[in-house]
Each structure stands twice: as C-alpha cells, then as structure tokens.
Length: 197
Image (cartoon, rainbow, N blue to C red):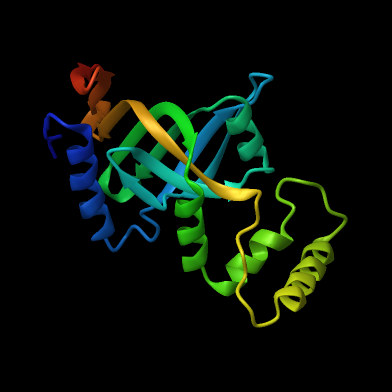
C-alpha cells in the first residue's frame, strides 16, 4: 500500500481517519497516546480519546489537576501518536498546546453521559486513594448532590488543543521498508520531506 503524497497534512489525516473509522477491526479509532513533560523534564505518556480535530489542531479533554493537566499547564507542548495496527499506519503529531475555550468545554461536557459527568466530579484524577471504595463513595456523593438536575462542568475540567508544528505519516512496508512522510509547519503553509524508515 502506497502513502499518497498530499500537499496538506490535514487532508492526509482526514483521508486516513475516514478509512480508519470504516475499518471494523479498529474498535476505537480515536485512541491516541499523549506524551508530555512536566517542569522537571520527565516524560510521561498515556492513552486518551480524540474528541475533535480541524485545521486548528487536535482536541482532548481531561482534569487539569491530573498529571497530564499539570504537565501541560507547566510546559504547553505535547506529542500525539495514533497507531492503527490493522492498517499498518501511524500518525505522529508534535506541537504547542493551548486550552480550549470555556464555551467549547461546556458544549463537550454537556454532550457526555450523565454518569461520565458525575465521574468528572468524583475522580480526584492521579491522586492516591486507599481503595476502590473511595471512588465509589465519591460517585454516590455527587450523584446525590446533583440529584436529577443538570451537572455543571467542574472548573478544573476542560480541554487542550495540540496545534501541530510537525506531522508524520507512517505506512508499514514489507521487510521493514516503511514509508515515512513528514510535514513541517512553514509560516502559513507546510513543507514535506520523505524520511528513511
């Protein structure tokens, strides 16, 4: 399978993403690894779900008091990795990070299932707990607190947008002769470069 050489990396991502969503063997096409580094320079990586993307960047949501939230607030740069194994493809994105607007965060939070909204209040993400019961107790407390009314978005819960400066598309090849095409931000446009695998 050959990697098309489109001039725009977002067109390339959109083409692949559409194919990935139609691939039955890929159960979670939005899964991506987010790599960060805190103020101490120590790298960390974890899986999250892509919730929106356009020419402005790639958006995911989290608790800003979590490890990744604190990392990104201290050092607003990140790397993303999509790996779609059944198609032998991966996409790497590197760039600066910005916070989404309160309006964007409110709209997305409002679209979540009620139990997920309550979970955002209940989880003291990345902090120690004495046992599973701690979380269950907090879920019950916030379920009672909000009863049947609207669940507002917590102030500490919002989204980040990774604004690409570099995007690389990797297509698996036989005998490890993979195809790698990197796009680098250049003013208002992009330059392209093939890389040895």
